[in-house]
Length: 263
Image 1 (cartoon, one colour):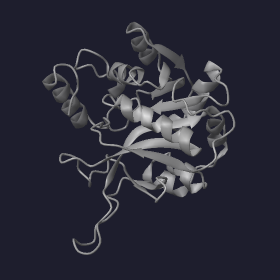
Image 2 (cartoon, one colour):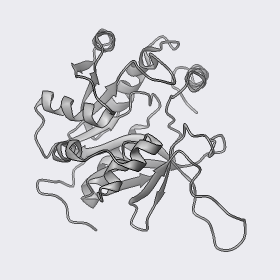
Image 3 (cartoon, rainbow, N blue to C red):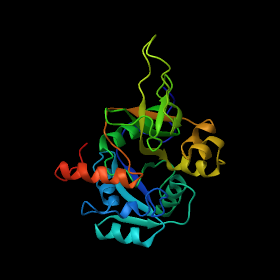
Image 4 (tube, rainbow, N blue to C red):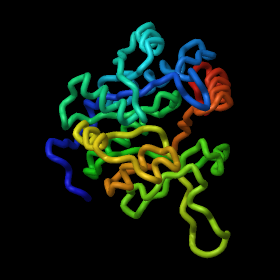
């Protein structure tokens, strides 16, 4: 097991969840304020993040006053940030605005993950603490209704230590045939990232990388620069909302579950 960084603790409490939220989604403009459930999508995300045992504060980071106003209407906390190329750099600015110390654990919960399971947040925080990796995230085995070939569903493959080897929109690993040794289980990436604030500052200094730009996956910058991402693997049903069709499916699940968003 890797050595823990200075100031780390075995405790998983005290993390700050920061949720980057912008209205300018290419595939689904305005999705964080979509409210077919009677609540804006961003409220569902905030409520899920608040339920994690490892999180003691939830903050939405946005560049749009409409999002800030919506968050404050349901009693949430929001900070205004500038223009950013990705959610990680927005997270870093929010951490600076909030004055978080270098060793503080920050959880980046995607603003389009209304069904993120609090347990997966806690396991990701635990993975960061226990491995000493620069970052941590979560993944789940594919379920019977998940589409492995869907480019809107990000996949991840791991090494023998539970560290991410690669993330892709392509169907990885590719199973060539049904014969031979047991095959690796396909893993669906869950949209949660965990860092210490000090690494966020380092991330801002790392140049964008070819794989990051090709796949449009900001976490690949970390791997291409030789840093490690620990991956907590657990059964789960969390699914992000990238398209209007995925949002409609979430609304249907939420209504079918009596307002609980079960899958």
